[in-house]
Image 1 (cartoon, one colour):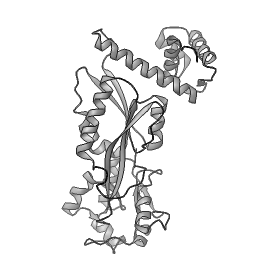
Image 2 (tube, helix red, strand yellow; image 1 turned 180 degrees about the horizontal axis):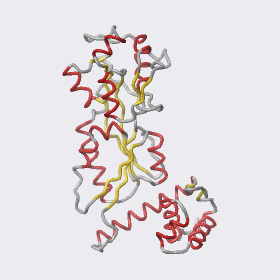
Image 3 (spheres, helix red, strand yellow; image 1 turned 90 degrees about the horizontal axis):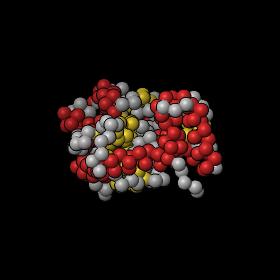
Image 4 (cartoon, helix red, strand yellow; image 1 turned 180 degrees about the vertical axis):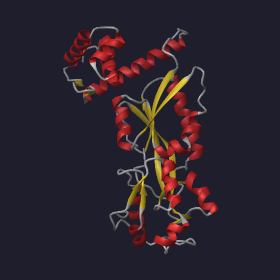
Length: 319
């Protein structure tokens, strides 16, 4: 493929970020006609349609490749200017990261607090489910992600972080009403669990279904039809404590409540362990490398090591 002119690449990025040709023109201090000509020239050079002319505009699959290249180029340029001691009037470094809701609510924010703030760093966190997390990496909207997928996105590296443990729990009152077979260290009968109201993160949350199938040895479809959606990690925990239903709550949130008696374990020897991974751009960026190291160190302290027991599906709630 021929060389990609940098002014055309930066123009394509501006159009995607701003949403329209006119807005990109204002940011670049050129006319909308010049923006259109640059994008068309880049499409002719690559031999591919790079943008869908919608409102706002959207990058095609080929366009996502160029957009990712443009963001990586901008990151490398900024790192080089910093190492050369050149002034950069763009302000603090912006670092977009995608992370699942349960990690965000438990161990991930303390990890970010360890990142030195010299030079200043602005974290831009995207809380997304698993499928969209990888889409954000492909599109170049984020530089890194905590995900449950071990398969690297094109142009990214992947490393294991550890196992996030979930405990199947319910409030004592809920268990007495709906799950009389549970308690005193006894595993709840599958039939009772399938008939009881369930708390889910959203419609894509399959963690409770996977747990029921694990208990049944794969002989059932999953949890029952009554499902209350609670799309935040804290709200999910609070809904279980309030007795709206049963659910799988992250161990750091559920453990203390089990010890105080506010929650009861429905299967004491059946936790769900979900593997988490860190994916990031293949980019020689000192900042990105430092953040990756800090996140890995914090994960090693907060998560369980592989082989620590328990069972888990590949999907993770709110990832």
